[in-house]
Image 1 (cartoon, rainbow, N blue to C red):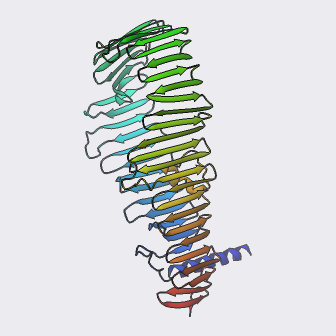
Image 2: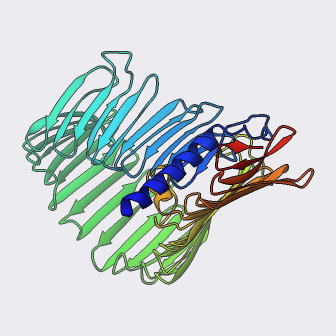
Image 3: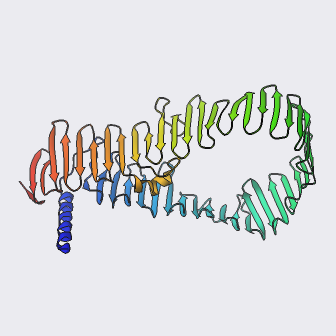
Length: 483
């Protein structure tokens, strides 16, 4: 009996599939294109989405392929694999069990990451002597710098690394016993780092015998010393714009006397009182109560509440680090971000910062209430998704590899077209200027032409159906009989 039941189900699906495959093409969309549609969602679906992309999906959110008329290409086998080509940047991105393995590249550069620690980057695949990196952090470093100089290092044994973090060159042997680092002309040699270090070049003269004694001189602009760090530190400045001196006797007292600033510190860094030409500052005690006025205005009762603004930027927090708001304003750009981790994430962007043709009166807005829903609204497109299980913001890589797995309902709109989907297309409603379509797989699908208010419908994927091809109307019975 079970075998007969499943045989009937299979026969029904095959009959519906083939009858749908050979059905007449739907009328052209608003952009003039026409795409033969097969709708067995969530099992299988083929057709054009509301954005005009050619797309097919299978097994709910597990398989998806999408192509746009601008050359963008997406293929995903979730949650194992995804591939994306972006013609605007001429970059492909390939990911396997993100973020375990990630790769990207174009006609010139290619790179990949494995487990975030093993990294390879070829900066010019057309040049066999170009700059490249093969790093397994923090143990193995191999590559060639921009000047075609090769390097190799096995940490902490010995080796040389080029263009590492902030350093142009970084050499060591039995780290931390010996170390050499260079940034431009500034060179540092250390023995038993950070105990003994010497820095020269670029106007710098520094010596450190940590924590006993150290000094630092920068041309004729400043001299700094410490003894038994952090107990005693002293600085003398000869800069034309602000000469003076400062010292700290930790943990008791500190003083700064500059031409344009005075500062007193008691039990530093807890209590500080500073006043200058353009700024006043009070920490009483730091970091719990902070106040400043002038170039930067700040008032913190940390970690409860706080506000700071400087130039065109404003920042405030509530129950730090949970809630925060950031705002940046420029003549042709405005950006606002509001967060309450992990439940709320919202942004508003105006101007051409992220999109050249974006106008100030057409902002891009996002809203995420975790784990319930996320919303994105742009110039001509809007999308509402439920659920939204990934906290914080919606990253592109998460959207490609994981978000469709838990997105059980979506509402999307583009220009005059709208679409609602529940359970990956099991229930779908699509509306446009010309028609409306509704389907509940596998029971019924209905379409209405708005111009003449004419209906077409299908029951059990063509077991009984009323269809239209051009100006001709027909009935279908038992999938293949038409009259």
